[in-house]
Length: 389
Image 1 (cartoon, rainbow, N blue to C red):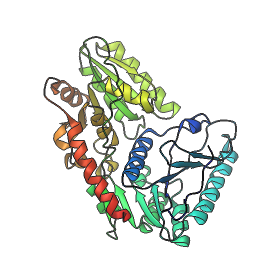
Image 2 (image 1 turned 180 degrees about the vertical axis):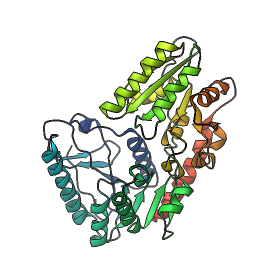
Image 3 (image 1 turned 90 degrees about the horizontal axis):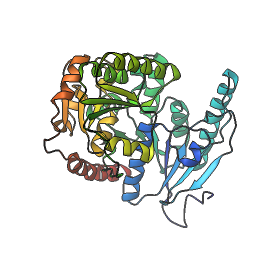
Image 4 (image 1 turned 30 degrees about the vertical axis):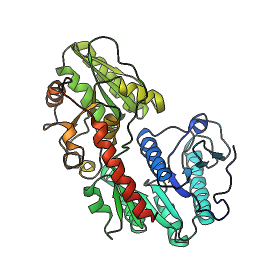
């Protein structure tokens, strides 16, 4: 369906929500799902609806197809709507530069037209459009609520990235943020904020258990070698016996995927714990897979600067699906509202990770969804306050 007007008579206009959000129609155009962002944005959309606000999603996804696609405007079954800009086809350097420029122009134009003063615009923080977003806010004066999950300059260590982040942070009127530690860094002007570690809503997709008696542990997330989580999970399997099966599901470049698959082959050749890469899953397939497992692994390197500010969203994703969680003992998780539900390891070694996995007693009572429900209620109230609802 085509998108209808963002206002209905005298009704409040829909909240604009900018990010890398996808849907089946966009996936069919080669615009890939970004699992962590998709999960978190979908949850926040549901919360916005719960407090009585309609949402107009603005997707900044490019296509990886060699074909171009027209702009997409579509009403969604839940009463929200989505806009995706025209997608120029994927290609070499010139094409990538051209479509980047086009995206900035299209986004700036939309914000100039719809970002009137007083309207709330929620934006999932991204270096891809940070400067354009900051400029549009400066010109139009809309109320910017910035959803910041991590400092990308901590990972890239580029001064230009740090400058772009500081500029867009300075334009925000409020923040949606995963940790108090990150808020202390980005919210220098002490704007209103709401803490949300991740998506809190429980998931019951009706997945089936894996056959057999093995204990299934899963690492779900980025294959980025700088964070090291996937490789760490695979290496831990060297120190697990045949009672265990370690799964890796997630996304990364071709080189990162090849590196993980090579390490899996090495581990499988030398031990009795089975290790598999099970692909990049999303939606119901992702939920069913997680619910079929027993233990979720959050195994990013402990010494990375990003660990001081970014909360690993996979921790909440595992809990929503009823999994026990094994995590590195990093401050943002240990000081979080869900720390009592996490099994920690203290050394960044495969042996320590394996020992933490083996220490999990699946017979112990465990129901994380009750704790998540309380966190959900608190976030609904806080988000209502910063949006003035």
